[in-house]
Length: 356
Image (cartoon, rainbow, N blue to C red):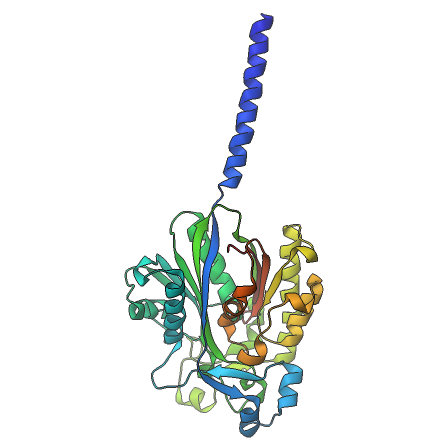
């Protein structure tokens, strides 16, 4: 009898040990969406502060003091649209990572400036790339668009639905800017950035995201006309209502608080201290907002990606363009926090462990 009880005890312990090993294996085999490549595209034409001084009542000093922007890129040329920048970014990404357009399972484009209200810019880009008959769609979340698209796209990888998902942030902001309004025309530029997501079980990739929105913010940052609320008319065109409208002080106040809050929350949720963070990738809207976010996270300027001085605010393009420029400095295992705030209001932060 004692022998039987002893055997049962051994068996129970063995089962428990086996379960622990199985649980460990499950954790180790968790599939994450890893960024395995990044590429950016910016148009050749540079619109400098000196040129803007001739267009509106402003100065280089005024622009630099309030935004930190020295120049921004503008897409020039008849018939060129956001999809053309998407195509350039994706082509470069595929060539760099050794993939063909037909290898892509899905393409998600974050943009505020689609080629047209419909179809989606992603659909148009796929046609131009020669990769039709795949999942492709747009996400509209203004300056937070790339973050939202990255998090959404990562779920297709994590669930095993797809193996190769391309995420693009792209905007031709010059198409919706009033170049007589000095409060907005000095801020925005055109550009696109793309990343490739693939599955990994190495513990790298997209780890966690905080994404939020508040529709009451629509009153302070929007495009007045061109939607179903106020369709295009002679009056709306004459009134320059198809361009960005922004109440700068209010937007600044919300952006400083919410972008920093999201970055701090992502650190707390993942038990990370300032020393654990290798890089902050902030939305390039305003140098003062970037500084406030970095300060809240306890990070020195050496850990913050900033290229606003030469590209301005490319809306959904800012984050991937930063990753593209800093790619050579990133190391496998680096903890990277991406943070953004945009129209909506929308805002959020994403924690990535760099995969290569």
